[in-house]
Length: 155
Length: 297
Ligand SMILES: Cc1cc2nc3c(=O)[nH]c(=O)nc-3n(C[C@H](O)[C@H](O)[C@H](O)COP(=O)(O)OP(=O)(O)OC[C@H]3O[C@@H](n4cnc5c(N)ncnc54)[C@H](O)[C@@H]3O)c2cc1C
Image (cartoon, chains in turn blue, yellow):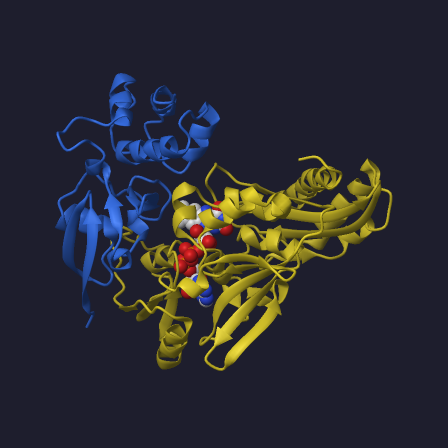
């Protein structure tokens, strides 16, 4: 029998205590236990980047992370980027302004990667943006407007 | 081929999070080959999802502070096996001497993968295409293996035994990677060829060399994905050592490397493609390293 484990972590500023199976993936716990379905599950093998969340401030793939491994971590999902009053954060606004959303499935991962880059580099070039979102795939192939949206946030 | 549901992890296992190397070794002695160490999990969990392996015990090594460090001391650069790639990138960006390692680290996966995956995991998976391997091989790196019985240090080239096979015993772990300090005049480079940006190499190559004017004083070459293990090239490089380097000599070396490697045909490339590309890749990497040894960035 598999042992269940209690894990404690912060998600979007809120502390959670969740009893998980040792083989539960972070993405499933976020979506199914906590109802945070903004994080998408697509390829399941790390290729696509749809499941990207911030773990201790750094983008990571929640489909290749065991929930038991993030005990004690501070996690931010796409739901946590908007301000508490519900107003969007600048990268989200820019995606709307530049129509950088087609089917929307890659958008949470893209926005998180855009935010992460801008945190480190306040005025990234087009090629720096391309390099940063290299592992986050948009199957509608709407990269041009995604890169434009992120670039518009630079200063 | 069976279709696997990668949205879940079917395998059931017991999970441990030890805080010291000693505890890991104790668990390994207790559970033997039923247990698997898990670092970043970016190789292991994919393999488990695809039901290639199904260990009944997983030992997480990411909470062991004595396995995550980068230290330059006493003639060696020492990197803890559980050090994440983004930390290696940040270190090498400051200390630009290890250029080939820097280029390999920057090219490994993508931002998210480098935030999760470790240098030890890359080597212990023993993929012929592991990007850090050629870069570490040209610097004559060694690895420290630790078991409850003690420690041993072996050369990296003796660590790889075949596809997914290493010199590690089931009760051993890799604790450290050791790279000899680099002389100021050394130039190095790493390049790989992939299908799309964030992808596993079809073929990769690293070169580290020293120059005395136009003479090549020393030259090490290593390649990935051209044989069952990451491979140190030890014939082709001899063509340039001690000689005045020019385009025709380098061309001779390119021809030789295509003969020396032992590539296969797989989903990423054919053997023939790899033989042809190896020559071209070596040419590009060699000249990059050559110009760097001459003072270029
Ligand atoms: C999307 C994606 C892209 C990738 N791109 C690349 C790429 O471009 N180049 C590349 O080379 N690789 C790539 N990889 C493969 C992988 O990310 C790397 O090999 C990585 O360095 C593995 O490290 P890890 O910490 O995640 O290893 P894990 O998956 O945790 O472990 C891998 C194996 O090593 C063993 N192990 C780990 N650490 C130790 C230790 N200290 N002692 C003993 N055994 C140990 C584990 O038991 C396991 O068998 C990619 C993977 C993904 C998912």
